[in-house]
Length: 262
DNA sequence: ATGGCTGCTTTGAGCAGA
Image (cartoon, rainbow, N blue to C red; front, top):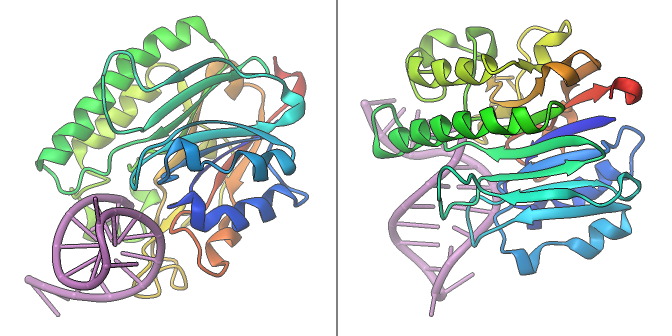
């Protein structure tokens, strides 16, 4: 089972990129999408069905919005839940579904704007509420994957220029501490379960030729519960999608789980 | 130091992203 997470920065604009990936040899079985930026009635259900995938989604106008798409043969999704019951929020940033026995959660963490700003405090509260909610979820679903755009670079190795970014948004102490809090629930950063090239990133600014110069950050993650982590066989970043014409500013991250792992 | 791209919006300059 290949599981992926991708911030598409508008599903309307990125649908051709997504369909191209889904029809390729390394197409994932399940993809969590973030920043779909469209309302539910505009979700491209038919185009994805045609490609062999089912969808569940939680959209809103213009901003945010998350979805999970998965191969038709994985069957009906169970216990679909929009949002966090511990944290009522008009922003659509969280969606969970049980697919083929795995609790899959698509998450779009707040950006936070600037350290100590109002949006930063919202980010920290949002994460605290997610932490509480995940405590329950892990009890109910021992096979769980938290996938998405975390808007946090967990370590200095995840930043092209750690000195310049030091203490700033996406890598401040409080954000990293909250990230480690999620890890302490028994979740593993699937990317780091395997050797990876240095300077591996999942986001590059659209400006200043950042992608070309590989000036990026690793802020998109797939965290696996102990049960899933023990059956993971590989992980990586599908960097080439960032190089397509009219790309998202994020590249997909992925991890492979042994089929017999459950 | 600033703004740099891109996508969104009662379509057009301003916000948001990271």
